[in-house]
Amino acid sequence: MTESKKNSSGGAANDDDADPEDCIIDEDEVDELFQQQIPTGVGEGDHRVFIVHPDVKWGSKKQHLTTAQLQMEEAVGLVATLQNWIVVDKIILSTKTPEKKRLFGKGNFQILTERIKSMPHITAVFVNVERLTSLTERELVEAWGVKVLDRYTVVLHIFRCNARTKEAKLQISLAEIPLFRSRLRNDLANMDQQGGGSRYIMGSGETLMEVQQRILKERELKIRSALEKLRRKRHLLRSQRKQREFPIVSVMGYTNCGKTTLIKALTGDARLEPRNQLFATLDVTIHAGQLPSYMTVLYVDTIGFLSQLPHQLIDSFSATLEDVVHSDLIVHVRDVSHPETENQKANVLNVLKSLQIPEHLLSSIVEVHNKIDLIHGYQPSESDALPISALKGQGLEVLKQRMESAIVKSTGKQILTLKVHLNTSQLSWLYKNATVQEVNVEAAEATALVRVIISTAAHGRFRKLFPVAV
Ligand SMILES: Nc1nc2c(ncn2[C@@H]2O[C@H](COP(=O)(O)OP(=O)(O)OP(=O)(O)O)[C@@H](O)[C@H]2O)c(=O)[nH]1
Ligand SMILES: [Mg+2]
Image 1 (cartoon, rainbow, N blue to C red):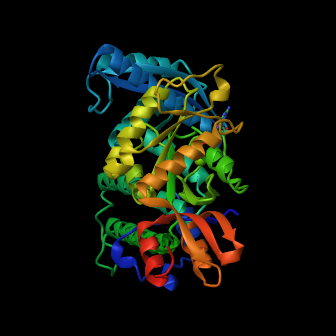
Image 2 (tube, protein in one colour; image 1 turned 180 degrees about the horizontal axis):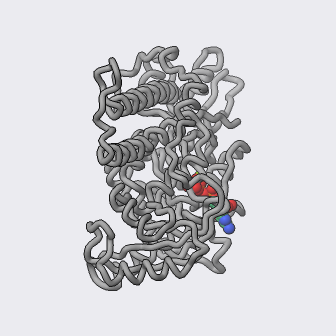
Image 3 (cartoon, protein in one colour; image 1 turned 120 degrees about the vertical axis):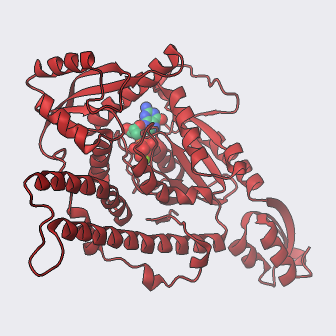
Protein backbone atom coordinates (compact mmCIF):
# COMPACT_ATOMS: atom_id res chain seq x y z
CA MET A 1 0.00 0.00 0.00
CA THR A 2 2.86 2.35 0.56
CA GLU A 3 4.57 4.22 -2.16
CA SER A 4 7.78 6.08 -1.65
CA LYS A 5 9.52 8.52 -3.87
CA LYS A 6 13.01 9.65 -3.15
CA ASN A 7 12.64 13.27 -3.93
CA SER A 8 9.92 15.75 -3.58
CA SER A 9 8.75 18.29 -6.02
CA GLY A 10 9.59 21.91 -6.46
CA GLY A 11 10.60 24.31 -9.13
CA ALA A 12 9.38 26.81 -11.62
CA ALA A 13 6.10 26.50 -13.45
CA ASN A 14 7.69 26.40 -16.87
CA ASP A 15 9.27 23.01 -16.10
CA ASP A 16 5.95 21.35 -16.77
CA ASP A 17 7.07 19.59 -19.89
CA ALA A 18 10.57 18.73 -18.69
CA ASP A 19 11.89 15.68 -20.45
CA PRO A 20 12.50 12.88 -17.91
CA GLU A 21 15.74 12.10 -19.77
CA ASP A 22 17.04 15.55 -18.83
CA CYS A 23 16.62 14.76 -15.17
CA ILE A 24 18.90 11.76 -15.00
CA ILE A 25 22.09 12.17 -13.02
CA ASP A 26 24.82 9.65 -12.81
CA GLU A 27 25.37 8.26 -9.29
CA ASP A 28 29.15 8.02 -9.88
CA GLU A 29 29.33 11.64 -10.94
CA VAL A 30 27.64 12.70 -7.69
CA ASP A 31 29.89 10.45 -5.61
CA GLU A 32 32.96 11.88 -7.27
CA LEU A 33 31.90 15.41 -6.38
CA PHE A 34 30.94 14.35 -2.85
CA GLN A 35 34.21 12.59 -2.17
CA GLN A 36 36.28 15.69 -2.82
CA GLN A 37 35.90 16.76 0.77
CA ILE A 38 37.36 19.82 2.39
CA PRO A 39 39.91 18.59 4.95
CA THR A 40 38.54 20.28 8.08
CA GLY A 41 39.97 17.58 10.30
CA VAL A 42 36.63 17.05 12.03
CA GLY A 43 36.01 13.70 10.40
CA GLU A 44 39.11 11.97 11.68
CA GLY A 45 39.31 9.87 14.82
CA ASP A 46 38.05 10.65 18.30
CA HIS A 47 37.44 14.09 19.64
CA ARG A 48 37.38 15.31 23.20
CA VAL A 49 35.69 18.65 22.91
CA PHE A 50 35.47 21.77 25.03
CA ILE A 51 32.47 23.92 24.09
CA VAL A 52 32.63 27.69 24.38
CA HIS A 53 29.48 29.73 23.89
CA PRO A 54 30.20 33.46 23.47
CA ASP A 55 27.19 35.14 25.05
CA VAL A 56 26.38 38.54 23.63
CA LYS A 57 24.12 40.52 25.95
CA TRP A 58 20.75 41.55 24.52
CA GLY A 59 17.12 41.82 25.69
CA SER A 60 16.24 41.17 29.30
CA LYS A 61 18.64 39.18 31.45
CA LYS A 62 16.25 36.25 31.78
CA GLN A 63 15.50 36.19 28.03
CA HIS A 64 19.09 36.11 26.91
CA LEU A 65 20.11 33.54 29.52
CA THR A 66 17.43 31.08 28.36
CA THR A 67 18.52 31.56 24.75
CA ALA A 68 22.18 31.05 25.64
CA GLN A 69 21.29 27.89 27.54
CA LEU A 70 19.21 26.57 24.63
CA GLN A 71 22.08 27.21 22.25
CA MET A 72 24.58 25.57 24.58
CA GLU A 73 22.23 22.59 24.96
CA GLU A 74 22.06 22.32 21.17
CA ALA A 75 25.83 22.46 20.83
CA VAL A 76 26.10 19.58 23.32
CA GLY A 77 23.46 17.70 21.29
CA LEU A 78 25.41 18.25 18.09
CA VAL A 79 28.62 16.85 19.55
CA ALA A 80 26.75 13.91 21.12
CA THR A 81 25.42 13.02 17.67
CA LEU A 82 28.90 12.24 16.41
CA GLN A 83 30.44 8.88 17.04
CA ASN A 84 33.57 8.95 19.20
CA TRP A 85 33.13 12.61 20.11
CA ILE A 86 32.64 13.54 23.74
CA VAL A 87 32.04 16.81 25.51
CA VAL A 88 34.71 17.22 28.19
CA ASP A 89 33.53 20.57 29.49
CA LYS A 90 31.54 23.64 28.46
CA ILE A 91 31.33 27.30 29.30
CA ILE A 92 29.00 30.22 28.53
CA LEU A 93 31.21 33.31 28.59
CA SER A 94 29.99 36.84 28.03
CA THR A 95 31.47 39.11 25.44
CA LYS A 96 30.88 42.68 24.37
CA THR A 97 33.17 42.38 21.36
CA PRO A 98 32.15 39.28 19.39
CA GLU A 99 33.29 40.92 16.17
CA LYS A 100 36.89 41.21 17.39
CA LYS A 101 39.53 38.78 16.17
CA ARG A 102 39.62 36.97 19.51
CA LEU A 103 35.85 37.16 20.12
CA PHE A 104 36.27 38.10 23.78
CA GLY A 105 37.66 41.01 25.73
CA LYS A 106 41.21 40.72 27.07
CA GLY A 107 40.22 39.47 30.56
CA ASN A 108 37.82 36.77 29.45
CA PHE A 109 40.11 35.65 26.66
CA GLN A 110 42.88 35.12 29.17
CA ILE A 111 40.59 33.18 31.54
CA LEU A 112 39.50 31.01 28.64
CA THR A 113 43.03 30.37 27.38
CA GLU A 114 44.20 29.38 30.87
CA ARG A 115 41.27 27.02 31.24
CA ILE A 116 42.00 25.39 27.87
CA LYS A 117 45.69 25.06 28.68
CA SER A 118 44.78 23.35 31.97
CA MET A 119 42.97 20.62 30.01
CA PRO A 120 45.74 18.97 28.02
CA HIS A 121 43.50 16.01 27.17
CA ILE A 122 41.10 18.00 24.96
CA THR A 123 41.57 17.74 21.20
CA ALA A 124 39.28 20.51 19.97
CA VAL A 125 37.46 23.64 21.04
CA PHE A 126 33.99 24.08 19.57
CA VAL A 127 33.22 27.79 19.49
CA ASN A 128 29.44 27.93 19.27
CA VAL A 129 29.12 30.71 16.69
CA GLU A 130 27.70 30.40 13.21
CA ARG A 131 30.97 30.91 11.40
CA LEU A 132 34.51 31.92 12.41
CA THR A 133 36.46 33.97 9.92
CA SER A 134 39.63 32.25 8.76
CA LEU A 135 41.61 34.98 10.47
CA THR A 136 39.94 34.33 13.82
CA GLU A 137 40.28 30.61 13.41
CA ARG A 138 44.01 30.94 12.81
CA GLU A 139 44.40 33.26 15.78
CA LEU A 140 42.55 30.89 18.13
CA VAL A 141 44.41 27.80 16.94
CA GLU A 142 47.68 29.61 17.60
CA ALA A 143 46.60 30.72 21.08
CA TRP A 144 45.07 27.42 22.21
CA GLY A 145 47.18 24.84 20.34
CA VAL A 146 44.18 22.63 19.41
CA LYS A 147 41.69 22.39 16.54
CA VAL A 148 39.03 25.08 16.59
CA LEU A 149 35.59 24.32 15.15
CA ASP A 150 32.54 26.46 14.52
CA ARG A 151 28.88 25.50 14.11
CA TYR A 152 29.07 25.50 10.34
CA THR A 153 31.90 22.97 10.30
CA VAL A 154 30.27 20.71 12.89
CA VAL A 155 26.79 20.74 11.33
CA LEU A 156 28.26 20.17 7.90
CA HIS A 157 30.16 17.18 9.22
CA ILE A 158 26.96 15.71 10.72
CA PHE A 159 25.18 16.26 7.43
CA ARG A 160 28.05 14.58 5.63
CA CYS A 161 27.76 11.51 7.87
CA ASN A 162 24.01 11.27 7.25
CA ALA A 163 23.89 11.99 3.52
CA ARG A 164 22.46 9.08 1.59
CA THR A 165 20.81 10.42 -1.55
CA LYS A 166 22.18 12.28 -4.54
CA GLU A 167 20.46 15.48 -3.55
CA ALA A 168 21.78 15.51 0.03
CA LYS A 169 25.29 14.78 -1.21
CA LEU A 170 25.13 17.58 -3.75
CA GLN A 171 23.70 20.05 -1.25
CA ILE A 172 26.56 19.27 1.13
CA SER A 173 29.16 19.61 -1.59
CA LEU A 174 27.67 23.01 -2.41
CA ALA A 175 27.65 24.07 1.24
CA GLU A 176 31.36 23.21 1.40
CA ILE A 177 32.30 25.61 -1.39
CA PRO A 178 32.60 28.62 0.98
CA LEU A 179 34.99 26.58 3.14
CA PHE A 180 37.14 25.77 0.12
CA ARG A 181 37.05 29.41 -0.86
CA SER A 182 38.19 30.76 2.49
CA ARG A 183 40.86 28.05 2.68
CA LEU A 184 42.08 29.28 -0.69
CA ARG A 185 42.15 32.88 0.51
CA ASN A 186 44.19 31.79 3.50
CA ASP A 187 46.63 29.92 1.32
CA LEU A 188 46.90 32.95 -0.93
CA ALA A 189 47.76 35.16 2.06
CA ASN A 190 50.43 32.68 3.15
CA MET A 191 51.87 32.25 -0.31
CA ASP A 192 51.98 35.97 -0.93
CA GLN A 193 54.07 36.37 2.19
CA GLN A 194 56.50 34.01 0.48
CA GLY A 195 55.96 35.76 -2.87
CA GLY A 196 54.40 32.68 -4.54
CA GLY A 197 50.66 33.24 -4.98
CA SER A 198 50.76 35.68 -7.81
CA ARG A 199 53.39 33.94 -9.90
CA TYR A 200 52.29 32.92 -13.39
CA ILE A 201 52.23 29.31 -14.39
CA MET A 202 54.47 28.91 -17.38
CA GLY A 203 52.71 29.36 -20.68
CA SER A 204 49.20 29.53 -19.20
CA GLY A 205 48.88 33.22 -18.48
CA GLU A 206 47.23 32.34 -15.17
CA THR A 207 48.62 32.44 -11.66
CA LEU A 208 48.38 29.36 -9.46
CA MET A 209 45.66 31.07 -7.48
CA GLU A 210 43.67 31.91 -10.57
CA VAL A 211 43.85 28.29 -11.69
CA GLN A 212 42.58 27.09 -8.32
CA GLN A 213 39.80 29.65 -8.27
CA ARG A 214 38.73 28.62 -11.74
CA ILE A 215 38.65 24.93 -10.75
CA LEU A 216 36.52 25.82 -7.73
CA LYS A 217 34.13 27.86 -9.87
CA GLU A 218 33.80 24.99 -12.34
CA ARG A 219 33.08 22.61 -9.48
CA GLU A 220 30.38 24.94 -8.14
CA LEU A 221 28.74 25.19 -11.57
CA LYS A 222 28.77 21.42 -11.97
CA ILE A 223 27.06 20.94 -8.60
CA ARG A 224 24.49 23.62 -9.32
CA SER A 225 23.62 22.16 -12.68
CA ALA A 226 23.23 18.65 -11.18
CA LEU A 227 20.96 20.09 -8.48
CA GLU A 228 18.95 21.85 -11.15
CA LYS A 229 18.38 18.52 -12.89
CA LEU A 230 17.14 17.00 -9.65
CA ARG A 231 14.86 19.99 -9.10
CA ARG A 232 13.31 19.39 -12.50
CA LYS A 233 12.79 15.75 -11.61
CA ARG A 234 11.07 16.73 -8.37
CA HIS A 235 8.83 19.05 -10.31
CA LEU A 236 7.92 16.27 -12.69
CA LEU A 237 6.99 14.01 -9.80
CA ARG A 238 4.90 16.78 -8.31
CA SER A 239 2.93 17.29 -11.51
CA GLN A 240 2.25 13.56 -11.61
CA ARG A 241 1.01 13.60 -8.02
CA LYS A 242 -1.13 16.65 -8.70
CA GLN A 243 -2.80 14.90 -11.61
CA ARG A 244 -3.84 12.11 -9.28
CA GLU A 245 -4.97 14.69 -6.76
CA PHE A 246 -3.40 13.18 -3.66
CA PRO A 247 -3.39 15.69 -0.84
CA ILE A 248 0.08 16.40 0.57
CA VAL A 249 0.78 16.64 4.30
CA SER A 250 4.17 18.08 5.29
CA VAL A 251 5.44 16.84 8.64
CA MET A 252 7.77 19.38 10.18
CA GLY A 253 9.44 20.10 13.49
CA TYR A 254 12.64 20.23 15.45
CA THR A 255 15.32 17.68 14.75
CA ASN A 256 14.79 14.46 16.76
CA CYS A 257 11.17 15.33 17.70
CA GLY A 258 9.84 12.14 16.06
CA LYS A 259 8.73 13.13 12.53
CA THR A 260 10.01 9.99 10.86
CA THR A 261 8.63 7.79 13.66
CA LEU A 262 5.20 9.39 13.24
CA ILE A 263 5.13 8.90 9.46
CA LYS A 264 6.23 5.33 9.92
CA ALA A 265 3.36 4.78 12.39
CA LEU A 266 0.85 6.42 10.05
CA THR A 267 1.91 4.59 6.90
CA GLY A 268 3.58 1.40 8.09
CA ASP A 269 6.43 2.14 5.69
CA ALA A 270 9.16 -0.21 6.87
CA ARG A 271 11.83 1.60 4.89
CA LEU A 272 11.72 4.58 7.22
CA GLU A 273 14.51 4.58 9.77
CA PRO A 274 13.93 6.78 12.81
CA ARG A 275 17.15 7.28 14.77
CA ASN A 276 18.00 8.92 18.04
CA GLN A 277 20.25 11.38 16.31
CA LEU A 278 20.17 14.97 15.16
CA PHE A 279 19.56 15.40 11.44
CA ALA A 280 18.84 11.72 10.84
CA THR A 281 16.61 12.76 7.93
CA LEU A 282 18.38 14.91 5.36
CA ASP A 283 16.14 14.43 2.40
CA VAL A 284 12.58 15.21 1.74
CA THR A 285 10.92 11.82 1.21
CA ILE A 286 7.31 11.02 0.43
CA HIS A 287 5.22 8.23 1.91
CA ALA A 288 1.63 7.31 1.15
CA GLY A 289 -0.89 6.54 3.86
CA GLN A 290 -4.65 6.40 4.30
CA LEU A 291 -6.97 8.46 6.42
CA PRO A 292 -10.11 7.05 8.11
CA SER A 293 -12.34 7.52 5.05
CA TYR A 294 -9.76 5.77 2.85
CA MET A 295 -8.51 9.05 1.45
CA THR A 296 -4.92 8.51 0.31
CA VAL A 297 -2.54 11.22 1.44
CA LEU A 298 1.16 11.71 0.84
CA TYR A 299 3.23 12.51 3.91
CA VAL A 300 6.38 14.52 3.33
CA ASP A 301 9.16 13.77 5.81
CA THR A 302 11.38 16.83 6.13
CA ILE A 303 14.74 17.85 7.51
CA GLY A 304 14.55 18.90 11.17
CA PHE A 305 15.06 22.41 12.49
CA LEU A 306 17.71 23.70 14.85
CA SER A 307 18.01 27.22 16.18
CA GLN A 308 20.83 29.11 14.50
CA LEU A 309 21.33 26.61 11.74
CA PRO A 310 24.10 28.26 9.73
CA HIS A 311 22.60 30.49 7.09
CA GLN A 312 24.37 29.13 4.07
CA LEU A 313 23.27 25.66 5.08
CA ILE A 314 19.70 26.86 5.36
CA ASP A 315 19.99 28.21 1.83
CA SER A 316 21.09 24.85 0.48
CA PHE A 317 18.49 22.95 2.42
CA SER A 318 15.57 25.27 2.04
CA ALA A 319 15.60 24.11 -1.58
CA THR A 320 14.64 20.68 -0.29
CA LEU A 321 11.80 22.31 1.64
CA GLU A 322 10.27 23.83 -1.50
CA ASP A 323 7.60 21.19 -1.45
CA VAL A 324 6.17 22.44 1.82
CA VAL A 325 4.88 25.54 0.08
CA HIS A 326 2.80 23.31 -2.19
CA SER A 327 1.37 21.06 0.49
CA ASP A 328 -2.25 21.02 1.61
CA LEU A 329 -1.52 20.76 5.32
CA ILE A 330 1.40 21.17 7.72
CA VAL A 331 1.68 18.99 10.79
CA HIS A 332 4.04 20.48 13.37
CA VAL A 333 5.46 17.75 15.60
CA ARG A 334 6.84 18.77 19.00
CA ASP A 335 8.85 16.70 21.44
CA VAL A 336 7.05 17.81 24.60
CA SER A 337 9.44 15.79 26.78
CA HIS A 338 12.30 18.11 25.75
CA PRO A 339 13.19 20.75 28.36
CA GLU A 340 13.39 23.43 25.65
CA THR A 341 10.15 22.50 23.90
CA GLU A 342 8.67 26.03 24.11
CA ASN A 343 11.78 27.66 22.67
CA GLN A 344 11.86 25.03 19.96
CA LYS A 345 8.27 25.79 18.98
CA ALA A 346 9.00 29.51 18.65
CA ASN A 347 12.01 28.70 16.52
CA VAL A 348 10.14 26.38 14.15
CA LEU A 349 7.36 28.94 13.65
CA ASN A 350 9.95 31.61 12.86
CA VAL A 351 11.63 29.45 10.24
CA LEU A 352 8.27 28.52 8.72
CA LYS A 353 7.47 32.19 8.35
CA SER A 354 10.82 32.83 6.68
CA LEU A 355 10.15 30.06 4.15
CA GLN A 356 7.33 32.20 2.73
CA ILE A 357 4.69 29.63 3.37
CA PRO A 358 1.23 30.87 2.36
CA GLU A 359 -0.90 32.31 5.15
CA HIS A 360 -3.68 29.72 4.84
CA LEU A 361 -1.16 26.94 5.50
CA LEU A 362 0.34 28.74 8.49
CA SER A 363 -3.05 29.34 10.06
CA SER A 364 -4.20 25.74 9.62
CA ILE A 365 -1.12 24.03 11.13
CA VAL A 366 -2.01 20.94 13.17
CA GLU A 367 0.16 20.95 16.30
CA VAL A 368 1.07 17.53 17.61
CA HIS A 369 2.58 16.95 21.07
CA ASN A 370 4.72 13.85 20.73
CA LYS A 371 6.48 11.55 23.24
CA ILE A 372 3.71 11.81 25.84
CA ASP A 373 4.60 8.28 26.94
CA LEU A 374 7.57 9.91 28.69
CA ILE A 375 5.40 12.28 30.78
CA HIS A 376 2.95 10.83 33.26
CA GLY A 377 -0.59 12.23 32.85
CA TYR A 378 0.37 14.78 30.15
CA GLN A 379 -2.14 17.56 29.42
CA PRO A 380 -1.37 19.98 26.57
CA SER A 381 -1.46 23.64 27.52
CA GLU A 382 -2.67 24.58 24.02
CA SER A 383 -6.32 23.59 23.70
CA ASP A 384 -6.18 22.46 20.06
CA ALA A 385 -2.91 20.52 20.28
CA LEU A 386 -3.10 16.75 19.93
CA PRO A 387 -1.19 14.63 22.46
CA ILE A 388 0.33 11.49 20.88
CA SER A 389 3.04 8.93 21.20
CA ALA A 390 4.28 8.04 17.73
CA LEU A 391 6.40 5.30 19.22
CA LYS A 392 3.59 3.62 21.19
CA GLY A 393 0.87 4.41 18.66
CA GLN A 394 -1.21 6.54 21.06
CA GLY A 395 -3.54 9.27 19.80
CA LEU A 396 -3.03 8.43 16.12
CA GLU A 397 -6.70 7.83 15.27
CA VAL A 398 -7.73 11.25 16.60
CA LEU A 399 -4.84 12.78 14.68
CA LYS A 400 -5.95 11.10 11.44
CA GLN A 401 -9.51 12.40 11.91
CA ARG A 402 -8.20 15.92 12.51
CA MET A 403 -5.94 15.78 9.45
CA GLU A 404 -8.80 14.55 7.32
CA SER A 405 -11.17 17.34 8.21
CA ALA A 406 -8.38 19.91 7.82
CA ILE A 407 -7.55 18.53 4.35
CA VAL A 408 -11.16 18.49 3.24
CA LYS A 409 -11.34 22.13 4.28
CA SER A 410 -8.03 23.27 2.79
CA THR A 411 -8.33 21.50 -0.56
CA GLY A 412 -11.86 22.67 -1.22
CA LYS A 413 -12.91 19.04 -1.52
CA GLN A 414 -16.46 18.10 -0.71
CA ILE A 415 -18.05 14.95 0.56
CA LEU A 416 -20.95 14.14 -1.80
CA THR A 417 -23.31 11.25 -2.38
CA LEU A 418 -23.70 10.60 -6.10
CA LYS A 419 -26.05 8.23 -7.86
CA VAL A 420 -24.27 6.22 -10.55
CA HIS A 421 -25.47 3.75 -13.16
CA LEU A 422 -23.65 0.48 -12.89
CA ASN A 423 -23.81 -0.26 -16.61
CA THR A 424 -21.59 2.78 -17.29
CA SER A 425 -18.00 3.61 -16.39
CA GLN A 426 -19.12 6.18 -13.80
CA LEU A 427 -18.08 4.16 -10.77
CA SER A 428 -14.63 3.28 -12.09
CA TRP A 429 -14.14 6.93 -13.08
CA LEU A 430 -14.90 7.96 -9.49
CA TYR A 431 -12.48 5.37 -8.12
CA LYS A 432 -9.77 6.88 -10.32
CA ASN A 433 -10.48 10.56 -9.77
CA ALA A 434 -11.91 10.83 -6.27
CA THR A 435 -11.90 9.02 -2.94
CA VAL A 436 -14.76 6.56 -2.77
CA GLN A 437 -15.88 6.13 0.83
CA GLU A 438 -18.98 3.99 0.57
CA VAL A 439 -21.01 2.23 -2.16
CA ASN A 440 -24.65 1.17 -1.64
CA VAL A 441 -25.93 -0.85 -4.56
CA GLU A 442 -29.58 -0.75 -5.66
CA ALA A 443 -29.57 -4.05 -7.55
CA ALA A 444 -33.11 -3.69 -8.91
CA GLU A 445 -32.29 -0.36 -10.55
CA ALA A 446 -28.70 -1.26 -11.49
CA THR A 447 -27.60 1.90 -9.72
CA ALA A 448 -25.55 2.72 -6.63
CA LEU A 449 -25.34 5.56 -4.18
CA VAL A 450 -21.67 6.43 -3.83
CA ARG A 451 -20.22 8.61 -1.10
CA VAL A 452 -17.09 10.34 -2.38
CA ILE A 453 -14.58 12.98 -1.37
CA ILE A 454 -14.15 14.93 -4.56
CA SER A 455 -12.56 18.21 -5.61
CA THR A 456 -14.74 20.86 -7.19
CA ALA A 457 -12.75 20.47 -10.43
CA ALA A 458 -13.18 16.69 -10.55
CA HIS A 459 -16.89 17.04 -9.77
CA GLY A 460 -17.22 19.47 -12.70
CA ARG A 461 -15.48 16.99 -15.00
CA PHE A 462 -17.73 14.18 -13.77
CA ARG A 463 -20.89 16.17 -14.55
CA LYS A 464 -19.58 17.07 -17.99
CA LEU A 465 -18.69 13.46 -18.82
CA PHE A 466 -21.87 11.95 -17.41
CA PRO A 467 -24.59 14.60 -17.72
CA VAL A 468 -27.36 12.24 -16.68
CA ALA A 469 -25.81 11.21 -13.37
CA VAL A 470 -27.24 12.96 -10.30
N1 LIG B 1 9.62 7.74 23.95
C1 LIG B 1 9.37 8.12 22.71
N2 LIG B 1 10.36 8.24 21.82
C2 LIG B 1 10.04 8.63 20.56
C3 LIG B 1 8.70 8.91 20.16
N3 LIG B 1 8.72 9.28 18.86
C4 LIG B 1 10.00 9.22 18.46
N4 LIG B 1 10.81 8.82 19.47
C5 LIG B 1 12.27 8.61 19.42
O1 LIG B 1 12.91 9.84 19.13
C6 LIG B 1 14.08 9.62 18.33
C7 LIG B 1 14.02 10.46 17.08
O2 LIG B 1 12.99 10.01 16.24
P1 LIG B 1 12.92 10.35 14.69
O3 LIG B 1 11.58 9.89 14.22
O4 LIG B 1 14.13 9.87 13.97
O5 LIG B 1 12.96 11.94 14.76
P2 LIG B 1 12.99 13.00 13.54
O6 LIG B 1 12.13 14.14 13.97
O7 LIG B 1 12.62 12.33 12.28
O8 LIG B 1 14.51 13.45 13.58
P3 LIG B 1 15.43 14.09 12.40
O9 LIG B 1 15.20 13.33 11.14
O10 LIG B 1 16.81 13.90 12.93
O11 LIG B 1 15.06 15.52 12.28
C8 LIG B 1 14.11 8.11 18.03
O12 LIG B 1 14.99 7.51 18.97
C9 LIG B 1 12.68 7.68 18.29
O13 LIG B 1 12.57 6.32 18.70
C10 LIG B 1 7.66 8.77 21.15
O14 LIG B 1 6.48 8.97 20.92
N5 LIG B 1 8.07 8.37 22.39
MG1 LIG C 1 13.67 12.10 10.55
